[in-house]
Image (cartoon, rainbow, N blue to C red; front, side, top):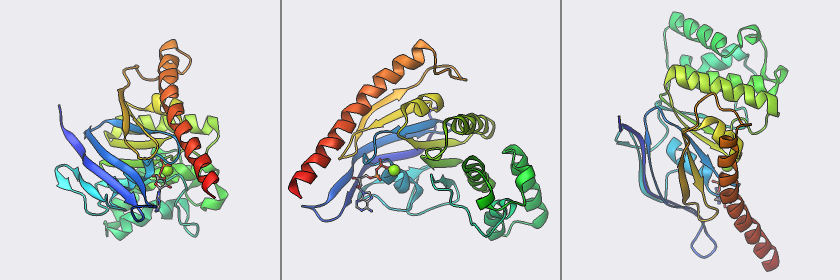
Length: 265
Ligand code: ADP
Ligand code: MG
């Protein structure tokens, strides 16, 4: 059962030249088992997106290695799908065309495309919206389309960078529930970035708390609470307080850093 899907070993990432450079990631080691729902948690600036982009293969680490199924990542690949906070949809395409697009690129047979797109439209409650354009959809609906588009490609790994960060609380909870349902049904490995403590506890099997500059692993917490999780329980709140203190420490470091920068200017 100890089947490592994503292995991150000794990853460092530097931006810029040495003296004025930023150490965005320092000595990150993580072994992520197949099927695990992992959240990267930390305040803004602690390297969450940098780490996710490295796993996606968009921006390689300065040193260290990332491997998927034992194969080293050197660029983006079909086994890793990414969902961003900004709904990266094509505005000139309908919902259906947005979902079809990746499959057409792959030259999948037409009948197979039609079947998959239909399945996804239903799976994400988008069937009534198939002919709409992104501009005519709410934020939550757009993000459903973005998820459907990634699911269409059937990647075993989903990388998600604050995908629900721009949504109101109710829509956000709906999409969290939806994502948990899809994750359980489709058995994906999910690496999900958030700065919301509650979101991390609601979703994750495991929460990796990161430090602010350099981005390191501060704590690696297994969440044992049974699902569906109830944010009003004492257990949920105890964990929320514990993680809250850790995140606050890092936020403080962020603020001190900004004050120092302001003083230099
Ligand atoms: P997070 O996603 O946790 O908010 P990021 O990964 O975006 O953090 O950034 C981590 C650190 O690296 C920040 O200090 C940020 O300013 C810096 N950084 C990120 N991308 C770049 C870049 N392209 N060039 C220079 N610095 C960057
Ligand atoms: Mg980020």
